[in-house]
Every structure is written in structure tokens, then in C-alpha cells.
Amino acid sequence: MVLVAAVVVAAASLLPIRQYRDQGKSIERAKREVIELQERREELKLQLARARDPKVVERYAREQMSLVHEGDEIFRIVVPADIINLPRAWYLPGVDFLITGTSQ
Image (cartoon, rainbow, N blue to C red; front, side, top):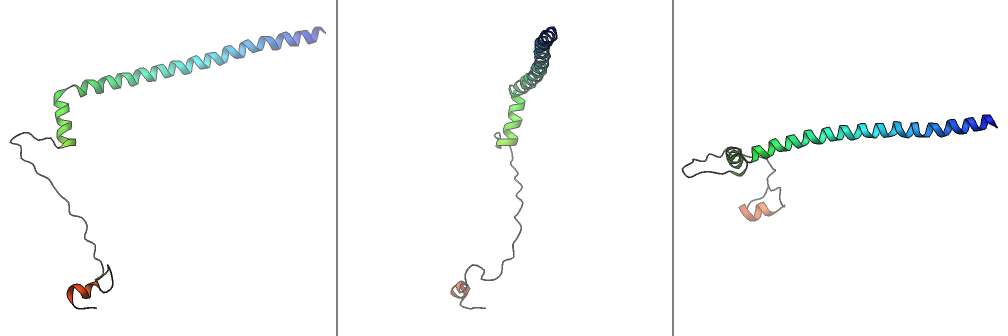
């Protein structure tokens, strides 16, 4: 009977130790998450500071939205698409005859 009581007391004392260990792990995860969120917050603060800089906003508008000022000269480079050699009268048989009067 004493042995059973000792086992019950030992088992009951292990439960709080396990909970304490699990809570410690949970606290460590929460601390890491807080550090990550603080770092992200600092990154966002820097982005916000840059977004408030008129020169950065103007550069972005010029590059992404093609902003031009009066007197600016615009040069646009257009790369031609690759030429595809399609077979003659590829679209419909007989259309070439209707257009040119000849057939192949």
C-alpha cells in the first residue's frame, strides 16, 4: 500500500514538472516571435521613411509609372517580336486562291 501511495505521489509530482517544461518551451517560442516581429517592424519603419522621401517617390514614379516632366525627352526601346515563318495559306485552304487568284 505504501508502494502504491509512493507511485501516485511520484506521478502527481511529474505532471507539474512536465507542464513547467512545456511552458518554458512556449515562452521561448514567444520570445523568438517577438524578436522576429520587432525586426520586421524596423524593416517596415525604414520602408516608410524611404516612401516619405520625395526623391525616392519621384524615382519610383519615373521607373514604374513612366512619369515625365515638361521638357524631358522620352526614348522607348521596342524589341521586335520573333518572326514566325508560317506555311503559305496556313489559315484556311482556298483563302489564298480568293486573295491572290492562284492556288498552290
